[in-house]
Image 1 (tube, rainbow, N blue to C red):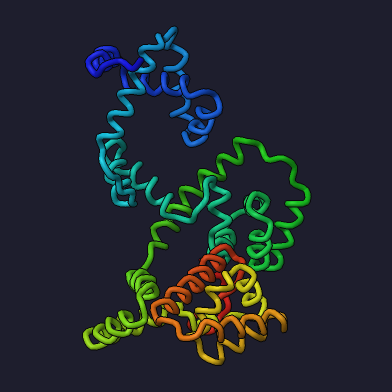
Image 2 (cartoon, helix red, strand yellow; image 1 turned 60 degrees about the vertical axis):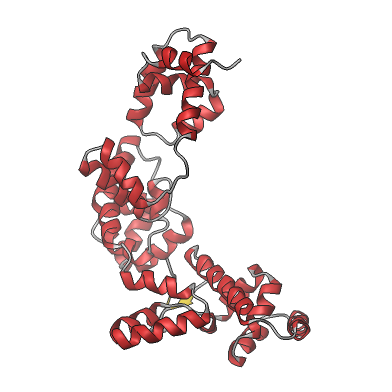
Length: 343
């Protein structure tokens, strides 16, 4: 039976936060505790483990009291909003300013749980430019640890002589000692990832372009018109960064076919109702003859469609294309016509 609130306070008051955490880790079982340990650094694991080892026998009533206290604190918080800003404020209260800043810069950088996951999500041109100044042996280690398809793109951007040297070192490379690997990780984190996070924070025009991409057609036209009157230069920059449904016409044939394999067919039919003849032709030309015939019939059967429904369908397809481009599954040409992966 659950202990009353008064007993909970009396039973847990003498325990430190670390001791309470240690008791909870033991109570939740090996599998769940293991998942939490995976998210901690070595110092946190060492400190928590020390407290766990020193606990001795813990009465079941005390374990229950700790979980009741935890539940009460959690339920009293009300709704929560997680953001970079709220996280940074919280870290600033418990960590030094430099440490909090370093952590935030790292998580603002490319996605990925490990350093090698993060590097695999860095634009190949950026990574290749950095590695050109590193020792070939270091480059060999880095390329051996990231995803092979990404390593191939980076290798192709290196000077030919250096690339061959790196290949030879990778062929001769045996298992890398743990301390060497850790040293490379520390260097990459300190000299590359943190600088990348600082320099890759999005320009305000990019943020506004994303917002405009998500506006309905009427609101976009109205607000862009007002913005052009007040600041034509800003409006032009935003328009150049926007990716619209008609911009799908810039996709190459392979990318169109990749997109069509993933898109929901009913959304495609609705979205194409508001598309130009040029874009429709591109889509139909990249489908099997029977599939194109069925899509045309579906579009005719739809009859008149509300503009709002067309906008929603087109926005879904655009967002899907951008998501696939981010994963490297298709290529979107930039505003200058140069084909490059969007990250």
